[in-house]
Image 1: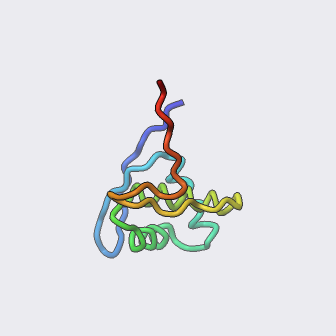
Image 2: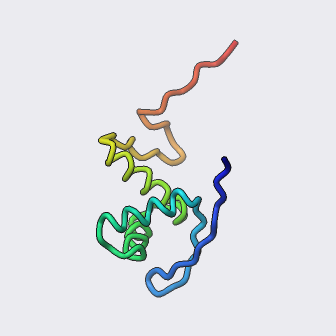
Length: 97
């Protein structure tokens, strides 16, 4: 089953922006906002304010994934380094002869 990416428009910090997300991630972020008893736009603004150089759609996906991990009691991996050594938790595949 293929999940289509839908583009949605939202207003964050008084400016209109678009978010391209699969329905599963959109429903996930809406559910998280409901669980936290805050408006969806408030949660999206929080994610937007805390993201590090990722586009907003990607930041939302990572946020939803980390929330799911937290709900399951799974520690998220440390952030990946950018342009340098691989993070400690990364396993490199051995070459196949």
